[in-house]
Length: 124
Image 1 (cartoon, rainbow, N blue to C red):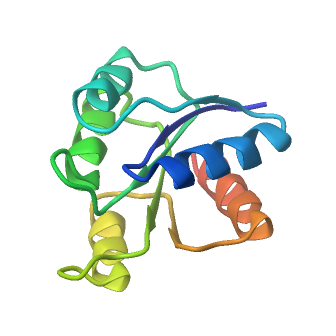
Image 2: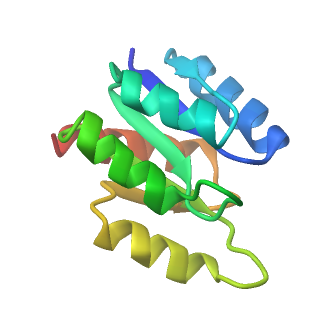
């Protein structure tokens, strides 16, 4: 069982992905994006952080930097469906450049999530 910090600005994604992670046996903390998410990152204690990379306000780049400051070895899984301004491929390339252990294009399937979790946690 992993302790997962899940950050996404879309309520439906947070609920659905949180349920999916719990069904895999993981413990999930899913704060609202922005200040609450940054506070959770700074508190630390997570085995993996899953974050959307394209969010208003505090974006995935800022989350990744905060994770690296708080828990340098904590794996990050970046997720994105992109936006009107930033295609998902660009967002996820940025995530990889900032040290994401794995990336997932939204929408993704349970098997893809399991594979990303395995890859991310084996790389630490």
